[in-house]
Picture 1: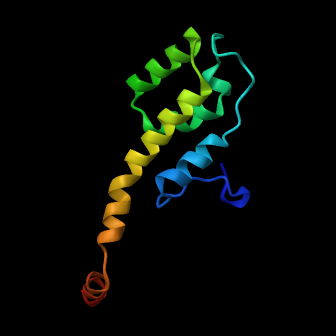
Picture 2: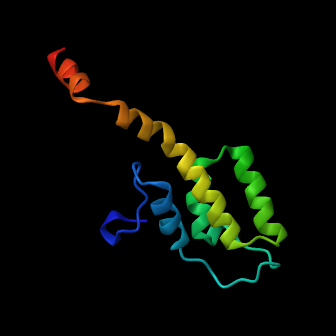
Length: 106
């Protein structure tokens, strides 16, 4: 993903924007029932950034077992990103002019 290609996910993106951006992540035309290679999957490359090593291993096993839908993976990834961004957005929204003025004063 790259900001210059306008296909990045911003920390302050709203959930609907995140969903649209994740939906545009390119995938291979592999049937749902077929095993998939996590090492060549763009979704996995992003998804693993939000997972512990144990969760990555579980996701890798799901890929290799087959029966995994890219649509479902994109929905899961969207939720992970939204949850990750929530505290960042909440903190950003809590900052007001008085806070900034006090920070600059100190």
